[in-house]
Length: 293
Image 1 (cartoon, rainbow, N blue to C red):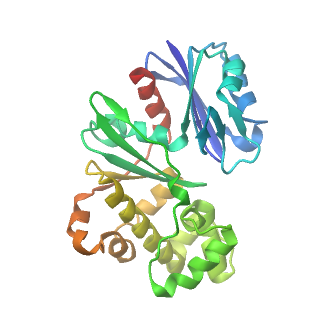
Image 2 (image 1 turned 90 degrees about the vertical axis):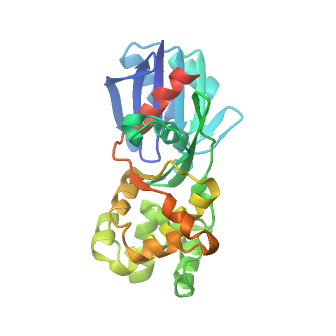
């Protein structure tokens, strides 16, 4: 059975075919969303170019899925229904997921996560946006609930950080973690702190005050997620910004905020921090899902 897989991010999208649950690497296509007329035409053009009539489409998109419709949070106008996608691709069955559910299913792929899924795992992906996914082993299947963790409240880190956290919330329009911990959020924080416009890479490499703020917020956010879900199978950072931040996790700014949990501080040492380097991890997760359901 051929399944069309789609990992739709805020900036880029990756499409591929899977046959009987196996990702076909020769069919992988990476596209910049700025160069596409929309979600439905993108999928229709991909299927037509490969003369593929998939039996099933599994699409994971960076936005909420409700009542058979999906809407991208950071891509205005990109929304559609499962019925629209079925008509465009010929797929008899369409499954819509939140994008991080695809990453969650990748946590059950041993080649991605470093071993089989035997205990709960959590991935925090940071790029254009921010979201988390939790993978639970249930019998012989993987359960990954949807969520929009990027829109949890900005964490309180220290009294000295309160003015900049308030400024970030005003600039972003709401008091959410994504206002600081996404790629645009890190650049926003640096601009508000210094008046300079710099890339994420430059900020992390050469702006210690901004980097320290980001790491404090990351430690507080990731620590709260850890206690909320108890991922004894590991905590994973993913996405381009997540991978960049992983290099700084030995920083005291991160470590203190991550571990300072009162009566639960000792428990925080149980959560191993890892990194997912493979940009194709969500496609591998969707391929695995295709043979589970």
